[in-house]
Image 1 (tube, rainbow, N blue to C red):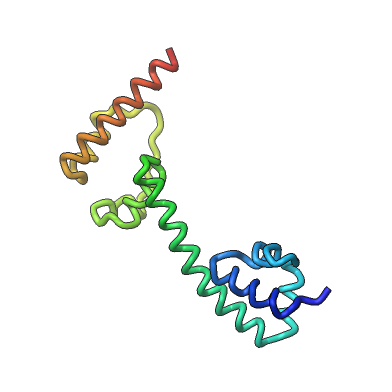
Image 2 (cartoon, rainbow, N blue to C red):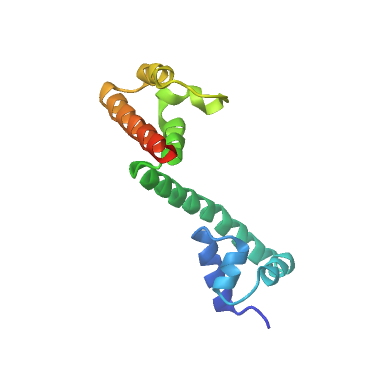
Amino acid sequence: MEVSPEQREEFLQHVREGMNRQQAAEAVGSTGTKFRFLCNREPSFNRAYEEARVEGRGELTERLERCAVELAMGGHWPALKFMLTTYGDAFAWARSSKVEVQGQVEISAVAGVLAKYLPSDEYDRLLEVVETKMIEEQSVAA
């Protein structure tokens, strides 16, 4: 079955919205392989695909960033760490540092590091959450 002009345009629109070749092809009822062959056969379609792919990368990045912000604002700690190290100048040290800790770490050691970089209200709120989680974990373990 040949790829119709409507499928081609819809496929390119899906790619512009951040889908990869396989996802976009499936969304129009085709396969990624057919669209790969189409790109190989038709240089003009390949150029249109590459342009759509570049545009789609930006759209995907924006969607992922919005998702990370929503997760971070909802208290998801890995997302929060990602957002802080990506956008927080005060956390630049964490971008290229690899810190491995073995054994138990006293909360006072962690608190000392955080006190250096966080505003006092955020520091107090963070410590309260960490202490609460630690108490909950100890209760579950007991």
